[in-house]
Image 1 (cartoon, one colour):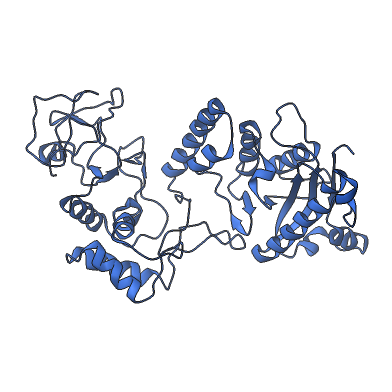
Image 2: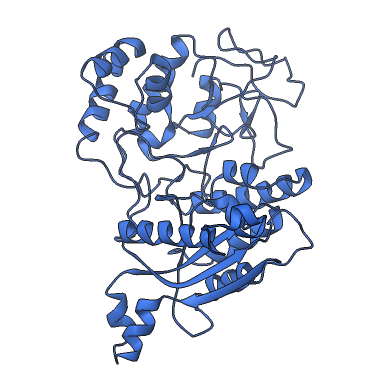
Length: 396
């Protein structure tokens, strides 16, 4: 039996409309969404043995049922269901009619019948896309407006993550191009002060689609005092491991539910989101017009000065993570530069003279360094990096 596709309105919506109720009355303040289900091979059609006791379309029906349960948890109303049964998502030449109809509805924010939709629910993202081209279609359709949402397995799927672009597709060339497009989107969103997204961080609340709350935007009333206590303890000189032991003794888990370690404590506290800043590829996100670090819209538990002290403390304790006090192109041999040259791959620590020259007090974390740079030693204004001119690493 060949694969087939179909779409249909939620039966309860049809009943409500036939009874004379309006769409808004049926919606009742919930978030309007579409539901997509797909399986590559319908087990009921593969053999007579498998077909016994299993009606055609059972697989996609089970996905719809699970998605409906998820919708109720998030305060979402499924307006229309879309399904591709027995159709693979890994063949570029194969057209999935229900998928294309669903993407068009999301992109237009309206179904073919004219009902508004702004969210997508699926059991797993692999069922929605397997190719970079399909991922791009879904990404554009969901993010065409700010309120767009993709919910997968009872959690909000972060379509703006760079890791998402890499894990979502199979072609190396398309992976690279997709990552570049997502990175541009992430950077623009960061310049606007939007939340970094990704996984929930300790101290912040998870997303709430019903209220429109984004992930990592507002403080968790239970974890926030603990996070502030961690910052104060570290600033008083308590070691990362000692802080981790105290948390574990008190039974305080990480945001992912695991035990703390010295490494996870340090990683949490030196992250620039602690003071409202954000770093992409080791450098602070800055306003293109002024060059100053962009201050995000999320709640920040520490001041810029406190975060800078935590980063310096991490360096003094031998962390391999270098920190950049100013953009890599901002100075050359301690003298300010007006325009950025070719990006330098050297993630160096800038000298105190360089800091004063550009009047920058913020510090950005940088996850890589090159051999001409070190985390100690006096500045060497005559030595040049292999990747371009720049001051030798030294303490700011």
